[in-house]
Length: 169
Image 1 (spheres, rainbow, N blue to C red):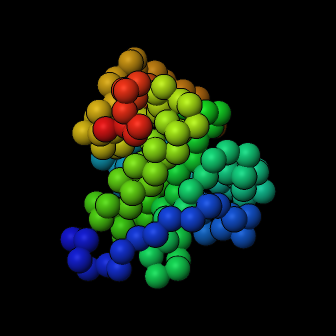
Image 2: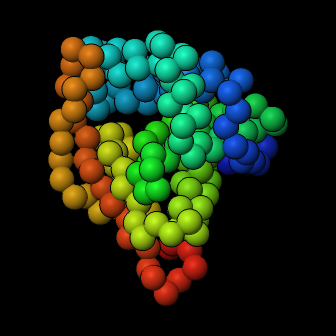
């Protein structure tokens, strides 16, 4: 798919009524985009994080969460825990590789830097790690985290912001 196939994406803040749809984007993204990196049991445990939609919405509401929309409908989201950790970045599979993740990440990098963060960290899945690497995030260490009855591997990555500049590169 190319970006000309879709209208331009826009950003807006998270709204509580987004919860059900964002939980579905979360599930669909994991199911369809991570199959080469995680087995069925791992993906099932990861997807189950959104089973308690009330807790999922509370998690997003407690963080800086931005929603990407196309023609007014959510197609992806990003959330930042604290002042400098990307907690979640998910894009609906139909909009993967169309610039939605880039739009979301650009916005969060600019916002967090403007709010005083000197860096951003992310626990990048094996699927997302190349995306973050292209953006200048550097692997800090490999880790394995529990998720339900499964263990998921990911990489802690960090991007430092240049102090002289008003925005990250």
